[in-house]
Length: 225
Length: 225
Image 1 (cartoon, rainbow over the protein chains, first blue to last red):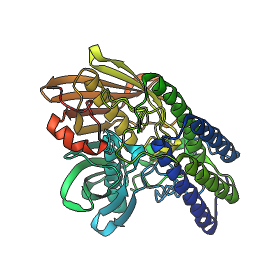
Image 2 (cartoon, chains in turn yellow, cyan):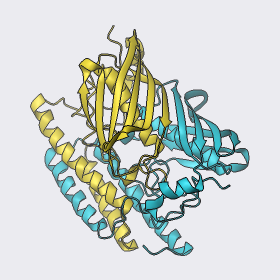
Image 3 (cartoon, helix red, strand yellow):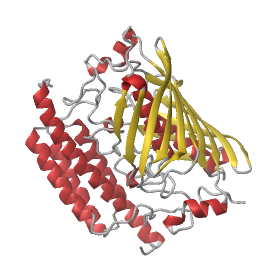
Image 4 (cartoon, each protein chain N blue to C red):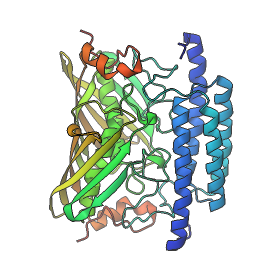
């Protein structure tokens, strides 16, 4: 796969984001539709045609997308924040690296439902995991999650604006600790869920092994020293 | 929305599963495609047409699907195991309720990637969360997750068959504790990730509040006594 120039990458990111947005609407309609059976069958057949159109040139499962930057960790198809991801909510995250902090804004749709009307507990964990790792990475302590603890205090409803904040608490060598909190945007004083994580950066040799199949240099999860 | 007869529900579940499978292939192609820009734009426009087709009859975000059974907790669009979900891997789970145990089989695709080539940490948490809650629910201790702890022991790669086992450890009143373990199918002796959860069943009054907007009786997460 040829690498893109910065300009080409920007243009492609736009197009990837547009397709991502269209597919997120399709996913939402698919999990909420009660149209008759023949329409469901027609939609399945149209979806297969669309798949064929996109399958003319596919990356292998370990290859990194041309729109991505594996050194900064910017992932255009991230299942959490990726503009090109059909499965992401997607969360929009503001970074405050000098404060070791980041703040995500997200409204979770029907496709990520757990108990009726509520956000799936695993999705709550995923949102927290992202801001936990990101607050540390932003402050120069990129790493993989080693342990994650989530405390669910109240049910989190679908379809309402949520705010998810991550904060780097401490860092020493390859290890960092972060905490996170999820609230409803219209009731920021009430914690709905909390998370805590220990993040550990990979040693360079270990990173070479783990990411060998990507065939690329992957900096964002690797110890700098 | 009219309730379906058991026969109608079976027929609709088939059609919903077929559309789900087609959309999962579309999602996979969308996050792996490197086709030219004009094809991306064409795909976005085709996806929007498909959305319009399915949007002729949509449930509200809190409404329960006609194919679902909210009393047993069977959810056809579950983001973890739902045959109709475009975002689920989907995991296939065998239940052993007499042993308080369930075993999930799943291969995670590119759309749920975290670090390059690896399953997103939040997705690992989601798979564990599901078997944790399900092992308890199968044994009659349905509840919402109150705390979830995940220990990530080794990177979990995309595209390989995984086995995720949940086990009810203890239960008293409305509270249950469960543990879970995730391994590669071809190396079952090596733990890749572990989970532990405290699950708490809602009191009937509280369940009425939490699920009020569904307009249905929701038994699967509610205390029976």
